[in-house]
Image 1 (cartoon, rainbow, N blue to C red):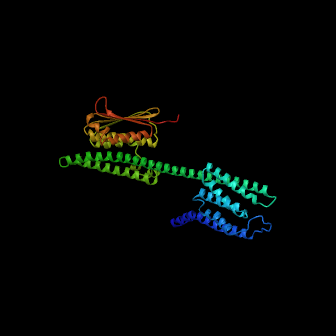
Image 2: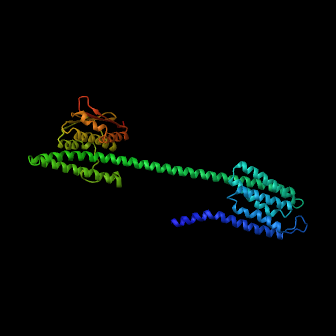
Image 3: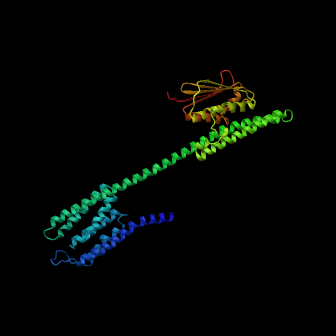
Amino acid sequence: MFAQRTWGGAVRRVFPQVADIVYSVVSVWISSTMLRNWPNSQGYWRQADVWAYVLIALVYLPLAVRRRAPLAVLVGTAACTLCYFTLGYYHVVVVCGLGLALYTVAALCPRRVVAKCAVGSLLVLLWGTRLAEPGIGPLSVVFVTVMVAVLWVTGDRFRRLTERGERLAVLGEQLRLEQEENAQRAVMAERMSIARELHDVVAHHVSAISVQTGLAGYVFTSDPRTAREALDTIAGSAHEAMAEMRRMLVVLRQGAERAQEGTGDHDVTPGLGRLDQLARRVEAAGIPVDVRITGAPFALPPGVDLCVYRVIQEALTNVMKHAPAANANVAVHYAEAAVRVRVTDDGQAPVLAGITGGPAGHGLIGMRERAGIYGGTVTAGPGPQGGFEVGLIVPVPRDR
């Protein structure tokens, strides 16, 4: 297929040049034949000789390169035609050569140049009308005038169409580049979304596993029961992390609908419906969590539901990482057209400074980016009563 396209492109490039060469050679042959065989019993024209055939060749052969040097070809053709007319040879056989040269200039050159060339060509052709047979001189004048006008208009029309095609080609290229840029931006946005989701999934479960691993190692010989419970919690966290990552892969490969398939609890997209399970997992890591839900609960859009859940999860993850001895409180309030969340702890605020900057700052950035998708806002900082506080407000338009 590639070879066919290459061959076709080569043919399109070479064909015009070959056509011009063939036209030039055939025109010389036809014009010479007409000059030799045209009856001249009345002696209207000078008898054909070597110079007549040389001038015919000089009129037509340069047309083989008319597209490369249109002005030079027109000037040379007009000069040879003028000499031909001045010497008084049969005039009709060279008119087509000058006409094609004028059309080429009109099709390829600026209008101000074409106007001068058209006037010059018309003067040369009018000089040739003196050789017309008696009685048709005025008709010859009208004919060459109309011919020059038609060639001028036709060539100018072709030039404008060519310029329009070039502009369209440029616009098409710009559109293609814009589409590629938009596609790259979409890919980057998708990568950021995936990275944010992976961070939220992995960071929470790894933090819980890290805490439980330390606990199990500490009491492994002194309190085997507690160590066993810690290992069970580790296994549960790892299992849930794998389930959520598997859900993400299903979404990436086959769309969100497949992510809802399955019968296990881990196949369900996380949301506030799993808030109690999240709290129990954090409590198993040694951090008491008090969950309070106020207002009149209503169904949230899936994206908003996941956003709220992930923000709470990330806030509790930071409590496990930076304040392992603290108590955490999660307050969810269903307002008239918004959901408000507040996650607080009673740890030491300076220890939690990492959430707003440095390597740990990716968590807060992810929260804000996730909330920003749905028009929400996230705040984070020391709480009024000490400790640390993360707040989230997400608008939820509701049908009345």
